[in-house]
Length: 226
Image (cartoon, rainbow, N blue to C red; front, side, top):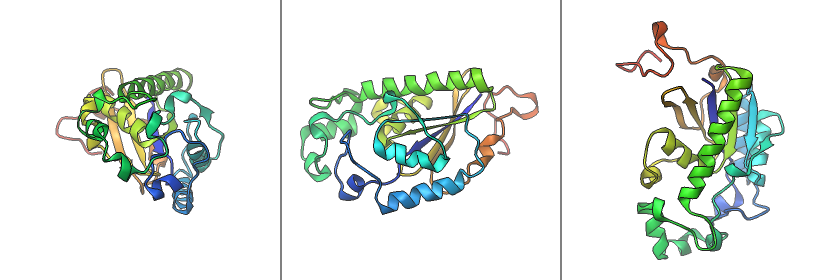
């Protein structure tokens, strides 16, 4: 089945200032973020993605330049709507009661004036599975495609792929400029790479073949040879 590369945008001015950007307009990559995009472009130099899809926010569209094409915009991949939390310093938000819920019981967290983390996960998972099925139909099982999104959104998609409850998704780390790879096979998703910020990406041009006739959906007992 196709391989999805989930890419978090590069570091922004809001990341550097420790504020919650959310869907605020005009949040752009800072110098470090631009360097991360340049490094990502080098890593993706020989990658041949069949589809490039992005959150509509500027920081993701800036990061898409690493892949040398204009992305298809999907609003289901945009940042969580943090409502009244948007644009506020993280140090200030940590003093609110809801912060502990977001940390310890995120499936119960709804941001005042915004959306719930459950709703964020549902739309994001729907988006990646829809695009993955379309890529499989139009480009075949060996295709690679790229989705650019945001930290919490990507973490929620990873949690779904792992069969992990949303209440555990804060255990995952997704850094700016990182790549996470998932393959949605017939019976289960496989997490192929997590929060990677250094390895080249061209190896994903090769199909994920089963070993010695083993079905793609089967895990290799003993771990396999890579």
